[in-house]
Length: 246
Image (cartoon, rainbow, N blue to C red):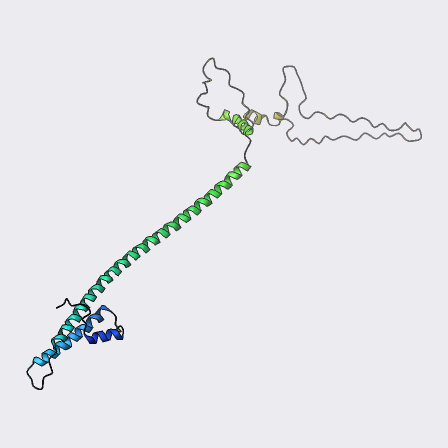
């Protein structure tokens, strides 16, 4: 008796549906209405079958019982549909939450990538500035090669350099270091002098003597002017060399 169509609701329930939706529009409210109606019909039937102390009420008709059963079956079927839809809603909510979490992870990864790109761009700007500064302060290649050649005598020899200690090897080339060697530092002030010549040659050491000043030639002697017998002024050579013996 639970396979009746939902259209076979009792007139009282149909009137309630025509008036509007109930206050508690939920699955519980949909089930309580038919259950209460069926309970009242069943109580009326039991009261009519009980021993008569007083005049018993009229028993309900079979149609009322069928209507109550049909209403309960329709409410149960509607509750089942609601539960199915509720499960679908819960599944969709879970999918939405999963999509939201994945979207948040994507946003976090994009933010981390943006920060990494900003750091890379900043590092690239620093390197470009360093390159520009290096170009501005670049040393000409001839000067750099000349300096490297002057330092090559005091660095490791190249692998293809022959062993100069073997007999028959040419003498090593002359090197001019960019700093004074020990001999020049020991000579001190004499390093600025010219090198010694061959045996028997002499030359002056130190600053060359300054030429003596020529006597002042004034006008012709005047017999009426006294003779100037003052000694000539001495010329001082301001030589500030504190080590004349070196």
